[in-house]
Length: 307
Image 1 (cartoon, one colour):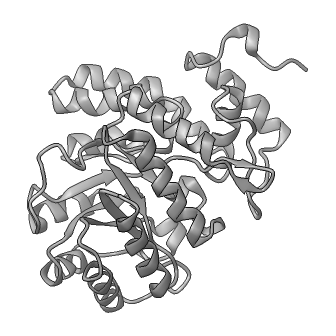
Image 2 (tube, one colour):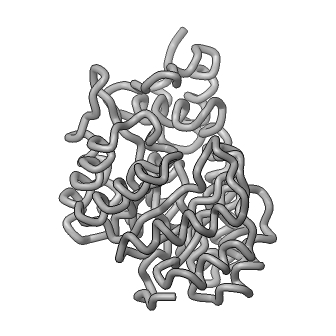
Image 3 (cartoon, one colour):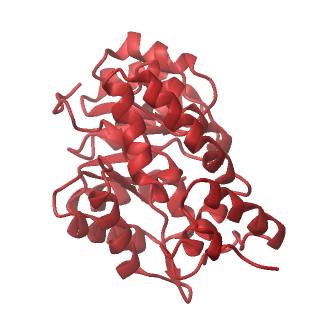
């Protein structure tokens, strides 16, 4: 496995939403969102992860988003390009374009819908990894991709390519984390992709967080990582509890539907616009989110929606 700087791919790397305006990607607003992450203490950011609606974007749009993020952060924090697709050819294209666009690493999801075997996953990731010089992380999200990757499979991929450096784990099963720490070694980067499991995974040795909630509370999510890193578990537990209700609200509907509504309410987005088949959050759930934002200290009483 390639050697990485000790601080690289460690910490809070929020997967940014993709803003739309009139059906088109709002690249100027996206640059603002990337800038905010750099200013508010995130250790990196992810472009076109699940939260960024990648399956609704074209190859050109995804590549341009990487370019915009790299330009916006100006080297202050790393930009991870999520370059996976259901198509091997498209994944390779996105990965190579992401590398040319200046990404510091790539995050490649297990190919969705196809439901490949473990042998197929080995060949797939080995082939992708051989086509880029960037550090590569596997994105494990069986709830969306309908395929799980086993620890032995990850180890086999690591034997085939030296740029496999980590895995984002968006699943409730925590055994995989420990299995990979033993099988791949302590330098293998493990990121938590489920907000509610952030603290448990960090305590078990995860390298960082790739959580959608970092779009609205970047400083607090980064502080959670730092508290665990510094051994201040009392502070970490307090932050975990403070984030808990907000974390749950992210999943009132399919991510990023509630998140985009939150961000529009907080003035971070001009509108919660999505692309089909995702549609706006329904009125009843909108009413439920405002009190959550109030209790999180993100919305003032005077800004609450009225009937």
